[in-house]
Length: 167
Image 1 (tube, helix red, strand yellow):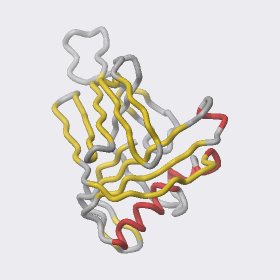
Image 2: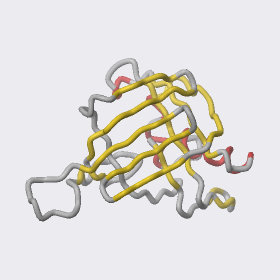
Image 3: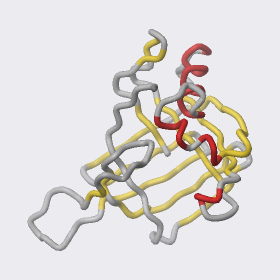
Image 4: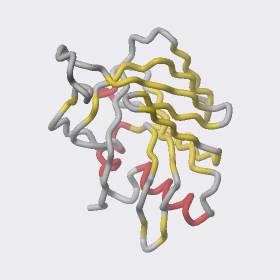
């Protein structure tokens, strides 16, 4: 999951314009737990901002990511890196140096006049309650001991704006 923070703060510390990527590896079905999770934090973040991003992304600060914490067995660390987000209409991508390169394109429904992709609503997902349905174009992850490559175009990829608050 990749997050671009347009405007945000943690304990009065501005996080405006920063980004982070939460990487996870699950040996079995996701609901069974035993996840290994790590964070790539924007290299432009100060040490204090990196700490805030880590607290938010790991769920230790409460908030939406805390819902995933019971599934995580191993937190494999935090690495600073340059993160770039690109979007062009329904096409989205995120890259992080040589660690992450992922892209997805919003899936259109049957209506040929539609300008928006299909959406999932009321998902209950900690990242957002409404997602645009997308198909992953490709995914390359080589960071924090997590390695995964897929160019099949058969995996899902959603995108959504997010507005979080801690509990």
